[in-house]
Image (cartoon, rainbow, N blue to C red; front, side):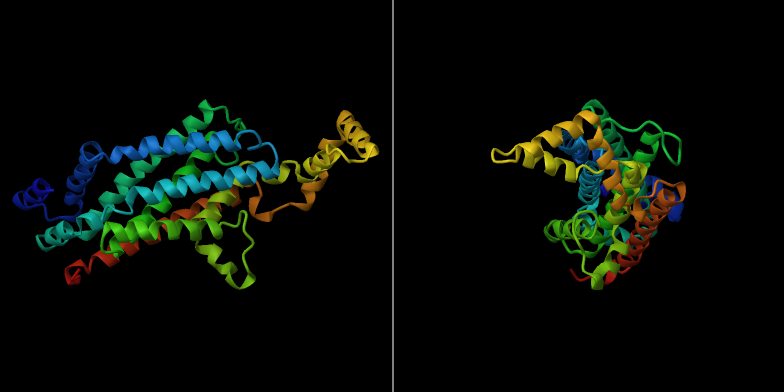
Length: 318
């Protein structure tokens, strides 16, 4: 840290653009020497854990795809939040000193943005690799790029990056790392509750979903997966479960076996899927790109807010 500060002062790099590579180099050195690289194996572990749970029905039916999209969104949010929630508050005093010596806050935040974007892309690539290695069966064709894995990778990156930038803003606001780690689970919980995936949100707070990264992330993943074209299996699974009970009516068991033999179980799944049609999950280029744009906008708002908040660091008495 002292080397960076002396380099900035001694070489008189006062321009905003000239300071960016200096701080960017510092962050990459911290990645190596301060063990910031640990977020990479953590992303791999979480991806393997999620894959083990969701791979059987992910991209196969509506219910499995919803669960898989929710789980993957959770992991991407966690990765992003954990990446940067402590990065500013842990060196707040150093930032204050360097700012008074000529450091531009915008250069500092932009450097963080570039570094965190690289980190998020590596995590996203690691997650996709783990999913492939553990046997998740992805669709082949993609709606936007023509390749599903490319569309899926873009969505993973955007969710992770937007969460990362939100955590960066939090790190600019809180006073220390303890406060940052206390706030992070609360942010994650709010994101998951208002994701629009599993929880029914009261009408008077529906508007909150419009500010949630998780909401648009889940929508993008389900749209890419072709959610509305997949069968629904909830009713069929319930019927099978009832027929296997000891006191089940023999005629019910016979009916279930006959339906399965004739392929009527699959027909029923597609018929029931019509009642579960979700406009948010339409598999169209417009819908997917709209989700990408909104997630990118949320990330941009966090970046700008971080710069604005940190500009007042000299007045901070903490």
